[in-house]
Image (cartoon, rainbow over all chains, first blue to last red):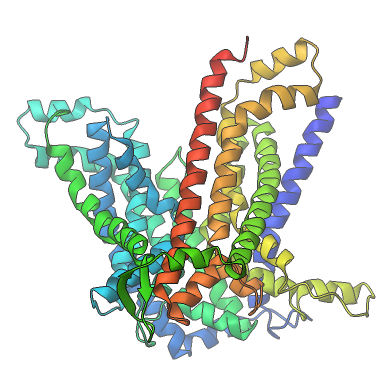
Length: 263
Length: 286
């Protein structure tokens, strides 16, 4: 009997925690489809707030910028992160400092990295814009790609690499035709993760975008809108942004069975 | 293939990238903290300890302590809730656990701004909570729910809870059920078993969760800016102001340096906790 009560208590805890996690987001998503746009009354289902997003030139421009930054930083981070992961796992015995440098981008407070990059770019007189946001995003993105690929490499059968070498393949051929294909699901999973991180990243982009509105990204646009107040348009935009993350994460999870991102 | 230089070659591009865009900029911050602020906001290249002294000036140190207090409280609440949730997930049937964990962590990967904004939607003066209160027949003035310290804490807990669940679930799921069964068979109550067996074995997860939430909260700038209202200041907002409005970069750098030191100290403490726990496993039967 005691066990059954314990189990019920556990279900109750789970119910409460999941309610806490999901109610705020659900309210937001729900209101984005409310025709009246106000939380006071449900006046009917409508997608008109999504339509009005499409007419907002600022939002479209910001979305375009975000896409440019996210795609280019993801490609760069996926290449660098994968090579790093393979190198680190072949070497096996890595010093503490190396592990720290690889791990640091995931734990360092965004604000610190953001001002550090801003200081460096300005002292070097580098003109800031989408390119500086992109190279900055690669820093944390490559760390996440590396973590996902390394997790996959833990169960990697290195004898196939030896077999490939024995059969006369060079290191590059082995990497390209043996290692990379086996790792592909993890590489794509890591890339998708990097993509969502970049799409959602605000603080580093905010500091490294430079002056003016030309290189504003979607999170920067959302931040500016939120400071104005709650509007149905933000609800709709927020819903789209959440959907992008959820889809990318679900795909990443599907490809990379057995390991949750971050685990 | 294990002794040659080829692995280093593979690692070089990424390590160069991290050096140029993380190590050097962070080192730059450390140097910047010791320079003087120029009269017109630039940097004067003479050494000084004034910026660091200013961090410990009561005016600013108060903000530091307040940030640490808020971060500590948020981390503690997140750990209690997160541990409970992780414990509950680990108590569910094995095959359901991955799905539950996935949905517990899912919000963590959606946009931070949006998750924070969701609380504004919920708590603002025309928000859902106020409407529910009115609908229930309450017509009086409600206390302000937005732009308070408590709202900031709720926002931080909400945003970082999934990570704590993940961190606590890892050691809980690895626990051998026979250990707790043995404890129960030997006559220990469920509570004693939890306190003397389960909790000590899963402390590293809690430590990881706590340090993570604390570090990300103390330097947070978005949550105080959005949920704390315009006047609310935490260290993150202070750093932001030095760089983007007050134009006192050396002082901003000094503040960041202290943040980095706090972070490093906590990470080391966490490593010690993890090490003790793994050493203790072999001896706990003594």
